[in-house]
Image (cartoon, rainbow, N blue to C red; front, side):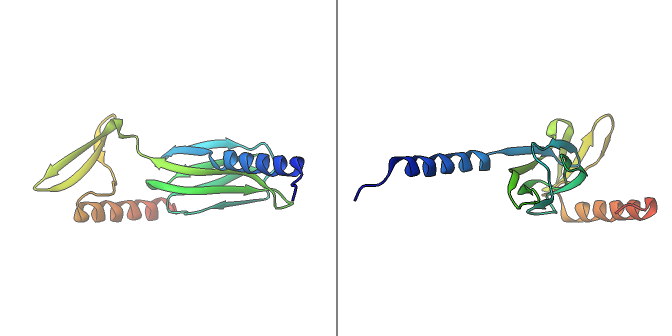
Length: 147
């Protein structure tokens, strides 16, 4: 049985292009936002884990990706026809250049020291210290009307 060459080449090219599109990676620091300009018009946007990153839409060609917590998730953008306009792995990292971790009796406490040292909510810190910081942040959000 003879297989036509052109359809096989087309299929291989499509698979290669699909794997290239999936290989994109978007890096965002936790608590920072990066703009993302799309080459096509967006009709729907899906983020894999909203605890790691979130998206705000400016218009159909400009979105903003915000890092919320350290980790990796995925982002997919589709046009009105349901075709994928953009796809990437979103990696949320820490800007550790200003972080200082103090170990007291085996318990970590992390501080962000730019320009002065303040407690920094960091996974892996002492559970009591971490819990106290979360409560303070929730109280501050309540006072300022934030979400």
